[in-house]
Image (cartoon, rainbow, N blue to C red; front, side, top):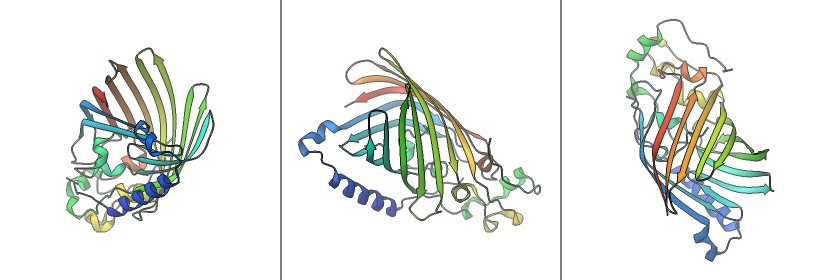
Length: 288
């Protein structure tokens, strides 16, 4: 089982520095801070399937959520941002966010407690022999390098077009693990039906070869029989459905599910045994 704890203090140093610099440049007054924070916690039953060989599916039982909206600086769960420009229909932000793929390799990861499933494939060459199944059985997982949680930094552009929300993000890995790049595109539609809130999302996440190779590649030194795998860039698709129902001032019901179809570059890896990730959660939410 590929389970290794990962705590990298460089990530927290980068995030802490960003918080200090951006928060100090925000013009919000201290007496307004309390109203700018929002906290909630979802309690229920859920699971995120794990495509990495021998690793268990990830349970989702407690999902705390928090946000802060300043004049320019904002926090949304694990995302830290700073508004560069905005008007009634669009916004441009600086954003720092954790990487996603390490959750499949680490038994305990902060992403296990935060809902992050909301974001033609490029294939990679795979040797014909030995078979993929044979290599799965003979890979010494204790020799694999740690898949650490990295910090991604970049730009986020949001635009509203005829009640359709468009989100485009461009990130570069800034913690020095793999020097990779990601592009994310999301299209979502909110349907307000009284106390029922429904949201439909379709999206795509392009990752370059350096990113996919860090998480899903297999160097020769880690592989049996001189078998190795170095993937190309790839595009992962996403479908998601969100529903919530307001019970009273503090309580609401919540259900969401998502289907993530992994790129061929990921699903062809000897470390991966399925080509998708399915997330489902249902429970109650308490709003403080």
